[in-house]
Amino acid sequence: MTSDPAVGTTGDKVRRNVTINVRATAYVRDIIDQAASIMGKSRSEFMLECARSRAEDVLLDQRLFALDDARYEEFIRILEGPAPAGDSLKSLLAGKAPWET
Image 1 (cartoon, helix red, strand yellow):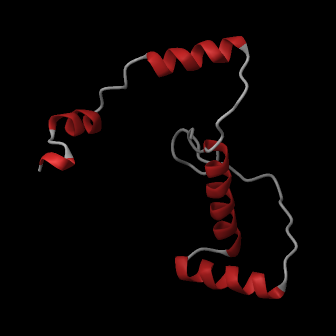
Image 2 (cartoon, one colour; image 1 turned 135 degrees about the vertical axis):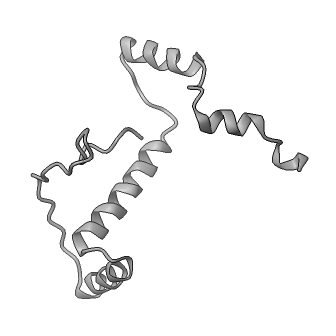
C-alpha cells in the first residue's frame, strides 16, 4: 500500500480528527483488551491496527478494479517499467536462488 497518511513527511504523527464508534459485547471488549495488553497497545491502537491491516488485505485482494483513462495509463506504465534498482533488489539478484543453495 501507499505510505501511512497518519504520519507526516518528517515522521511526526498527524493529529487524528475522526471518531469511529463501535458497539460490542463485554466479552469481545475483554478479549480485545487482553490482546491489546499483550501487544503493549491501547484498545484503540490495537483495534485500529487490526482493522487497518484487514482493510488493506481486502483491498489488495481485489482482482477487478476500475480506473479512468489517465490512471489506467499510469498503472500500465508502472507495470511495464523496470523495478527500482535499490540495494535490496541488487542483493536479491546477486544471490543464488533458494533451490540452488
